[in-house]
Image (cartoon, rainbow, N blue to C red; front, side, top):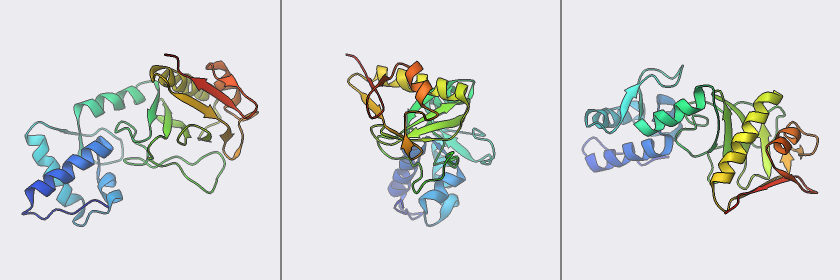
Length: 209
């Protein structure tokens, strides 16, 4: 829960707005409700509207079904477009361009397990054509897959490999998919095709450099 500024505490209201923008990139009513801010969206709206007047954020209808009162930085809008305009992208789950767990609910995994995806540090989400394909816990060992579409998973796995390759020194190891071993899972063939190396426990990808 974020600290609650009073109307008279302009610095605190400013800090609230900064935190929302940094955390979500695109702030919607749902984002604010998720933070359980006393005073709700009306309080945050006044601060964000002030940011808009100063040119720090833009107001628009960026995410369908989330109302017209959405505020975002230009950088966040550009990143969001990358995920929705026919592309595949692997992002940190906490990246402001990731709408899942903020403006949008996470989709249900193919197999219902005891844990759910979340915007956690170190976790990664692969998005294809605006839809979440799979989610990886920190380090990648545990994956939650949201689709059995082989083409979508192949594109998502390639995007993941590309993202790891760009992060010099990064290392990912995938061992579990939807509570089962990765071998023979929906991610088996996509990871192989994307250049992941098979190990006794799963698949690994090491960034060079």
